[in-house]
Amino acid sequence: MADGNAPSSIEALKSMEPLQGLDSHLGMAIIKIADGYARIKMDLTEAHLNLFGGGHGGSLFSLADSAFALACNTRGYLTVASGCSIDYIKPTGEGDSLVAEAQLIETSGKTSIYDVKITNQNDVTVAMFRGRAHQTSKLVMEQVNDKCLYM
Image (cartoon, rainbow, N blue to C red; front, top):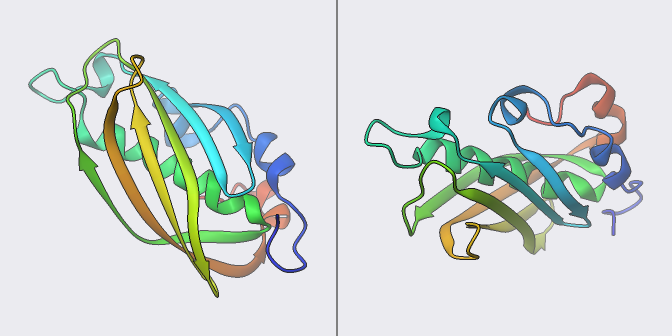
């Protein structure tokens, strides 16, 4: 459900598929968007690897952060990250197919907490991300045309 009197922004976010900017460059795609929820995917290629051949932490962080951003912005008002952390649990590598699932955990005033779980093609959790978001007074619907979702 959208916050307060804000119209739902889920359809506006879905219209941004295919994703653009870094999300597009990294090969991310939306699987599902719902109220306080987003699920996106990314297949690891050679470009996603660190110098030792494992999945680069920045690639996984970007996947989690993008799922977090989409989930945060489903509730009507433009929402920006105010803090986050990630824990890398299992190694990843070229050919892995990763899914990041972001879910609203708690809201208090204009602050919300989201958890993002990244799993691989075997449904093994490879990373956990927690993000804190701040809701602005701007409507997502007004920002989508300007592509301002990721401030």
